[in-house]
Image (cartoon, rainbow, N blue to C red; front, side, top):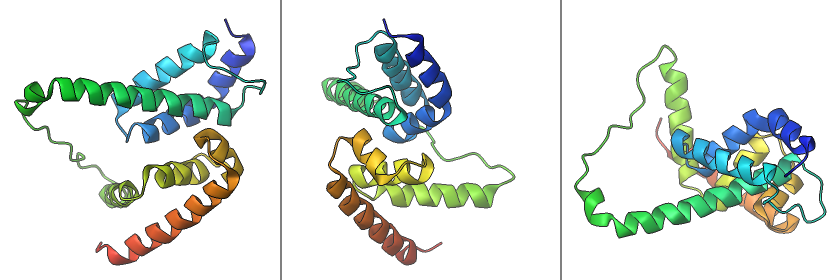
Length: 170
């Protein structure tokens, strides 16, 4: 069982952890909540390996990311096994409901759509740097890639997003 240090770190970083879980789960709220719960349980039970490092936000984000990837793999296998059943399900309307800030919602929806066109690594890297206020070095730790690789993906992602923003009609 982990110490109270782990519990207090999770409490301190919970809002940003939830946002990161949402990003890792492609903004599926239910899936993000499940992934976050599993990740927290692993951390608190000591099943997530620290490898001699201290409990930090980048380390917690790494646990969340790996948990989300495992969850996604299980979901894909389950989906393939039940493919016939899934095909018979009715389509659900995922369009956002209207609100007073429709322009803001439309801009966010547009940005999410453009971010979805980036590679997974580029999208995750931009999320960590811009939404979680991490340095590129911290983001590289979370993603388990070298700093040089992170810098290359960061620059490529910004360039691609800039190009997409100028090409995409509003």
